[in-house]
Length: 391
Image (cartoon, rainbow, N blue to C red):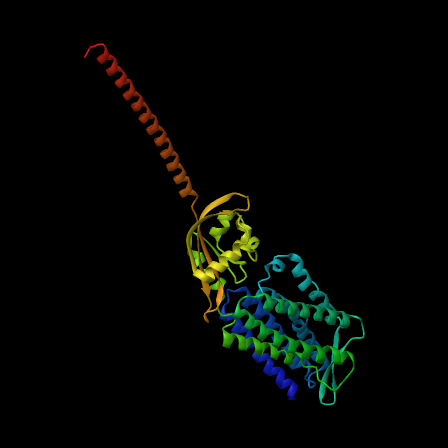
């Protein structure tokens, strides 16, 4: 067995372990599921490489496993971008159907072209190297453009996330992912696309192995800095499920990343309509989110302040608003937990009591006025009687 096959086998086991490892870290979190799915693409890719680069197997068998492995290298760029969008909490794009069309619309087309011999057609042996052989059609060039566009999109979103994030922990993750992704992207593009298309046969096609750089960067972030272990939304999940009060979880940018059913019922919104949107949507006060963030960072908490939230139907709801800082395991600012109690009934009761008090005051005032008038009349009558010597 040559060194490429040994490395492919090694990569297959590493990717398989990492896919399971990431998933079981936090199986209820979307980001863990998407990340695990993207790693499974490498599992399929490296699995195919074990067989289609083994020239001791019949050509038909090698071709079959080449097509099976293609399911991994055709799909992984789309799942990579989806992972970056979830990681950066870009709910604006994630809530749009066009995003998923852009990410996954090309996959069935390229899979069909691969299985009909229009993309990668063979793995050729040149000396001790094994080089991918692309078809002479235009489809390899279209796929290369599609793959590079998706990967650059993901890198761009990741870079913007690192620049815009106020979370030191998240910026640390971005640096690790950005470095490992850029190294993998550059090497895979050179070895598996540029060199084979240029018919330069001095470097082997080992993209399924070189993506280990990205996998190892991810593993380092998980083990060293607890990446994908517990997110603010996950930390609040058990609390949210048992609360009757509305709970809104804000990320470091002041965007809503989790809301419970009580909040949706109160505000008449669906969860996906609120996720990724700043809380300014729900209040009439300008720059509310930034003001709350500044107060929380300074005072650590806000207790039972009365204010009004604006529901989707434009009805203003009186609430008691409390908020506290959410810190990560390393002590970094990780978000804001907002607990909101609908005090509509309390306000109605207060208004009824106030109206009753005002009515009572009016009646008391009238009674006092009547008594005052009665006293005046009594004094007048006494004066008249005294003047007439009646008494």
